[in-house]
View 1: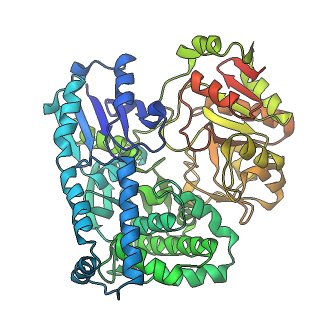
View 2 (view 1 turned 90 degrees about the horizontal axis):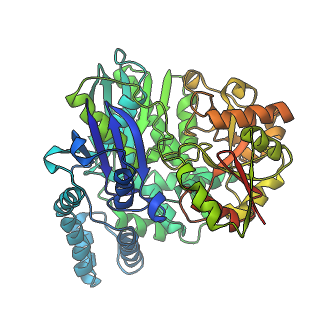
View 3 (view 1 turned 60 degrees about the horizontal axis):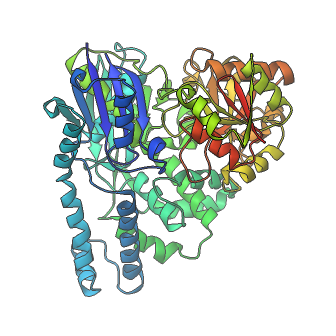
Length: 587
């Protein structure tokens, strides 16, 4: 028997426990310390697992650590580095002539009096290399045996997560793509997964589309590594002509080579240089036009990269992971490509999910070959243990009603146009709420978008919500490509074109510019509670779908437990809260 503890101590830190290759419990640190997108060792999440007796430290057979080289970088230091690069970029853009070479950048920084600061920033990255020792000291403090620790390279984590997690068979080959802003000195890889092995065919450390997307997110005043989705959501509102014009700008900085199979930069580029180019050429441009051009460029270059490798290797079943593939509009286009026979994307495929890849890799390397290891993503605790104390804590502010058929009651409230939060069953892992820590609403009443935004979400006005759709009825609402016919989209990783005749019934869950929907396809096997709610709602309204958005206040992580759930209820205008078989309302 294997009992693998997997740890991501970097961006979006997380920890998971895997028995014989399958996840038992996986947690993100942000759900415990309440700091969204937390960077660092998952102290509280790991302590929770020990206190809740998920495992005894001595029983751990292996410790899988994401990345060969950990980074002792805080969230604040990470964003400070972006600010450094942006300031360098301004000086390069306005004060000196920009030449695109390493030597020139060094000389220009010296002449601007910034070279010392630049070296200091580089030295911080060197100091990061010492963090492994700190990490081992942490592990020892929890009673763990560091002789059992194995580091798994960053992009291998991404590749292993999607291949071992989602491949349907070891007997057929898959093309495995990873693409992100960087990890362990790589930003893109192409591999073949076959017979339980992952053979890397190419890799690149270019300034990637992930870097470009994050840099533009910062330039436009949003938070990089968090708000990229806002640019994706804004893009469809812009006319194609404007998008094409700005797409041409980005095409100067990233190319495809070797018959479109590998990325390359035409000249030396880093954040400072790219920011300088952006400031010189895009300053004063409309932010929506920039967003549209960036999204169009991202779609075009990644599609060509995928197509080029399919031509090269003759493999039409593809698997994708890494932060760039959080872009559901890109994934939609990939799923519609005629040369793609089958596609899947690992759920919430940023660095938080690398704990799956690290554990899967260790298991397959040491204990035996297996695939299809991921069959659920609701891998956190249930709210029940703290429910009684939560009710007592807020007894002067809430009313509590125990209900026999809670899911039918929720459906009735949704029919009556109430906004209902649900905190029941096991908590989802990752960035998407999948029904157990969700805010639900009637998708046919457009005013619900403003109501939810005003009361709890505070989202940018252009951002759509998502529909959760019964899988057996999905064909009536959305166009499902042949490449997704067997697996659907149970983790909200794809957008779909909606059926024109069905749009009125799901108007809250579709993008108002291009009428796409980031749908979650719901089955009883994966999401029994949410399935029952939607089934009852269909019985009451004829609509096999509900609006689903994450249960959190703006700027905070998704709620984890009863205390947090009731706190959000009291600090919002949500009409009711369902926790297990209780309906809770404000007095």
